[in-house]
Image (cartoon, rainbow, N blue to C red; front, side, top):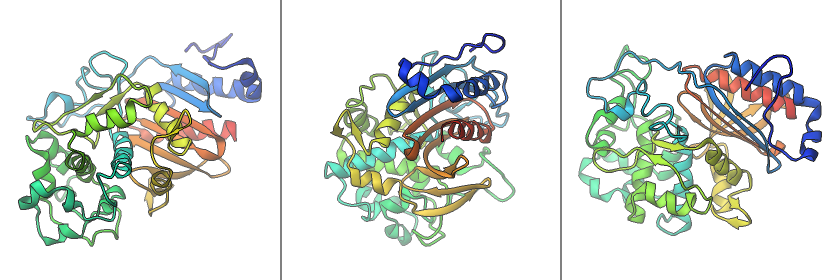
Length: 366
């Protein structure tokens, strides 16, 4: 990306598509210049599709703004965010960390397991699919938690920091889980302190449990099941997924994809679960995934939550946007009313900056 006199915007499109957005080309070009100059934090890639056409694909010189000085001494290398072998790209490849955007991809995996009959219903108690761990549940209240409660972050499970701690410190339950050899016991040892299904509380542990439910229900490790049932139909051939010491798939934040392959998932979502005319994920699952299950407040946003997907309002017209979001600035954004999919990848501690960029992109195409 080069900014200045004679600016060249990298647009990949047929001439007809170019004419259709000619009125906003200079504005988009200016936005991309601002990204290059660092106005929107450390962004590596911006890709946009509209009406099925690739309209924008910009790569930027990687800048790394995530600095976490406080690291648990036992933290495995793959969870040390300052380790350049793993963050933001995997081992020097084009595979980019998705962090918690992984949760949304894994939610599609639950939908596929329902499609295939491995999971009878999301209204089933989660413990039905976690029988090998029945001796580990902390209290009878666990039997009241449904799979849907996990999907919508309404589990009621205590996942709070010790008193006085703020954010992902070395004492946070997620950190404790990531440094442990056995993740499942770490989650199941937590008490249920709120009635399941009643209150939103963001919890990395329940997203990991959803992956383990896929494993137990299908008999395949979750990364392998999703690769077979989702990635293969989408022609996604390269990926990396972090595996825990006990051999389970990290479905709370361990997936790496090429940004363009993350875009394929967005296009699948935009088409209601279809890919090249074939229904991959059931349409009913897609409808439930993007239904507002609970309204929440998040940094001033008008935000709701579905099945591990965020639902928000964007642009001057306050259009509905569905998004997968991950630490460091990983975003897959879908705006159905504009027939638009946007991928943003980066490595910044200021995700609001990426959201501001997305909002500006939307405003240019409303």
